[in-house]
Length: 337
Image (cartoon, rainbow, N blue to C red; front, side, top):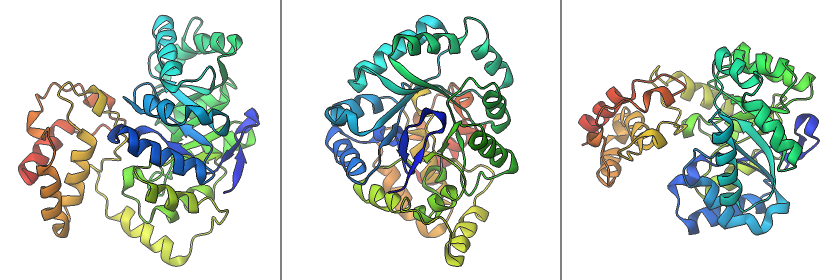
């Protein structure tokens, strides 16, 4: 495993990290197996969030006794002082730790939100308080708008920036952001590297990202097999073969404008507990005729169907890609139900 420096923090992190969102779909035994395999493979950077349902709890329950083996990052979307402090206390309790290595102000996607974060008494001031108290070592920011994240980086206030970067999301804006972070000692954490699992082969997709000056890339992993495949990409080879490049290009060119990256931000907002990201994954795969029968069988096994959607719309503002989730759930049920 190759190790890189996380910007000015000086922390040496495995170039392949562990994204904690998919843990929400695992039981305790499965989570233990995946996390143990990750540590055994040399992965030493684990990223989660208060909003990822039971992800923090599963991490704490599984590997808190190995806390000195990994850099722990979590984050919060709330902005008020009392809300941040409450969420922070919950996070450290669930994660069974006294110190968060990297605490991130989560989901900053507009300049107005960034201004509020930076304002006197804003979220950043609360994070600084936690830092002074010694319960937070470093402060980061996350989002999906590279222009906003670059503006955040230019303030010099953040030790790390976490943004989406993949073979699909590789525009010049995000490339400039990554370069700026590298040149200014800011760690760049690449999220959504596999576009929710659509970018295959995964190993090639991760190598593409590692060919850029990112600090760490954090794919989500649901199985020991995925851990093994993803960790192989961290062996230091970053040049893609012509065949690997062609395979990634074929996948990228076949994705439509309504492609769901399965970031799962919509899921916690659903009062019906519909597994929105999973259903939209089935819908996307079912668009290929050879997959339709299998996707219908998988959908049939889901305890809560898309038909349970009440069209409340609470999921819509959570989607960073502004997908028409309610309409897509209807389509999914019509096609798969």
